[in-house]
Image 1 (tube, rainbow, N blue to C red):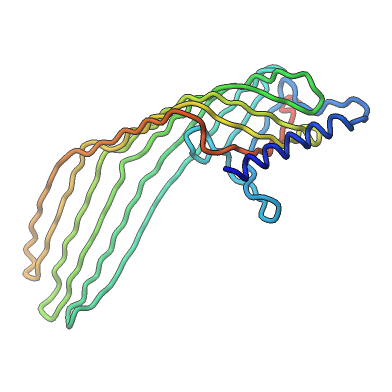
Image 2 (cartoon, rainbow, N blue to C red; image 1 turned 120 degrees about the horizontal axis):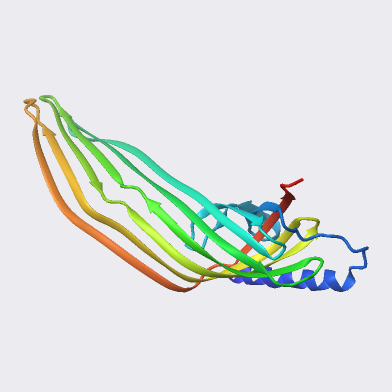
Length: 253
């Protein structure tokens, strides 16, 4: 957080200095109506600078696109997907007995964040704006599977456990304050900060099915049910300042 604040003030200082020393022939640096582009985040400082996906108001990584509806009003939209697929296995020995355990887990989340910006300063390079955005996340049902196999001289004893519960939903509404400074035509460095709230709800009814197959080979199945729900609401300032890199182009030619 401290590094982000330092970078924020460095960017502001660069903009002020460049404005006071700029004696070029007037040129259109800031995009106008009909321009579209994308923004990414700058990560690290000095020796380890890099770029990454933009961060939406609820903290999800998204591809962030923008379109100038007019010279002042900009439509923005973020789209992100987070898919987690885990597979693990282990083997252990206890005397002449071998224990194998295989486990898998999968869950996918889709995030969208439409919003709008108003750019209020008529300047050649410095472009501050205010705006707002809605953020929505759709979280799929998590799926767990575990297979435990115990093998000894008499044969194999196997236990399979399948677990599945309800997914979730995230909703947020955020006010946005930021600026761009155009270091070249349609190419800008900037910073953005968010203030708002989000609510995350996850879980619900769950089901667990356990199938045991002993050495004898006669399987038994046990099905259990329950409910496990959670809801978290957060209100306040974002915990990070987004340092951005943006590029725009005229999609109308």
